[in-house]
Image 1 (cartoon, one colour):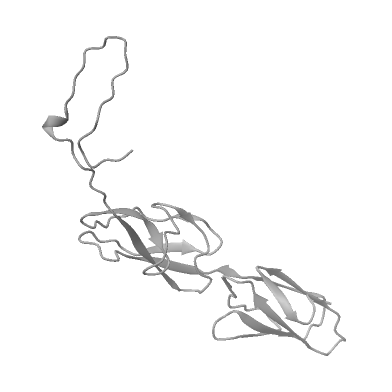
Image 2: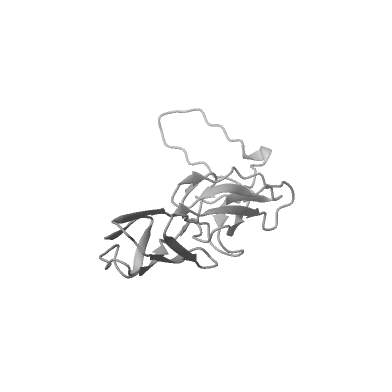
Length: 188
């Protein structure tokens, strides 16, 4: 009996437990789950043919006794790069400590854009804000060694008109209602 004990991977051709006649061999094809990569496996009597992107492998074994093969796929690592998207100052280093399957907080924004407030991060240059500053994110890409670029989203600062010095109004309270008028461009 040949048994594959898999972690973050599954059998795509064959069965995880296969009965093999003495002297014969069997081949079982396995595939890593999304966001995971298959490791190199060395075990006596096992031929392990791993594809180039390390997501699929053919396991061939010619057992002489019951055999269990344990294969644990490894979570992919990726990095996040930050684009100031029109910033006037500030820089940010890439965040390269991201692991598929684990949540992590994005680095705090260090970009500045004169006349604008930072709103958060978008996955496209002209997209809407998807992640606020220092947001907890998970699985931004499944690609091993991949890079995700997040773009700063900016909102234009609004200038509130100031009151003129002639706007100061006073009234001695006499118990009746008094209506004041505001001589500025502020409505509401």
